[in-house]
Amino acid sequence: MHPLTDADLLLWHRRAVTMARNMGAPAAEWEDMAQEGMLGLLRAQRRFDPSRGAQFCTFAYPHVRGAILDAARRDCSRCEVGSIDATLPEDETLTFADVIPAAPLDPDAALDCSAALATLPGRERFALVALVVRGWRGREVAAVLGCSASRVSQIKTKALARMRRPVA
Image 1 (cartoon, rainbow, N blue to C red):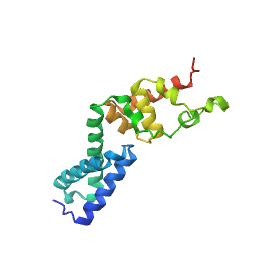
Image 2: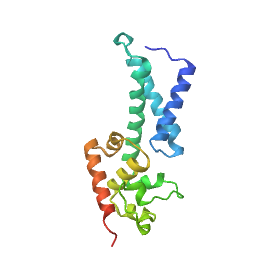
Image 3: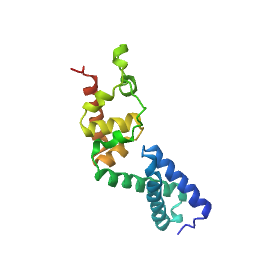
Image 4: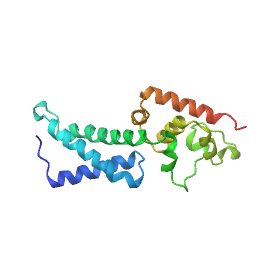
């Protein structure tokens, strides 16, 4: 078992909070998700074998990140997938150029696209906001949605196609 000092625990706690924040979790949940990450750290500590030649940091990082993702998946399974809108600040506005890479330069098209996002089905809206706005990785979104990363890519493509269609 790899020994962890108080300084190590503090460092790993900061990393876990940063991971939770970078995943787009609401600020109120950062500490809870960080605690899940710390449980992942303890599991990594028990499983670490220095004779395999890896550094503890290299070994522990995926365990901490995985524990945080598992917590996010559990939390998301208890709520509706479309509830990611609750994680968007109210004053945050998105233009089509923010969401769609090749958006038209028409000034009318640069209007707030919140209405267009609202028309998307829950899984598509969740995937698009998580990937484009929050910067999640495809496999992180896949873990929350319970599908593969390639399916997340398909969902994103479908959502972008829907958003490119003119609004009737």
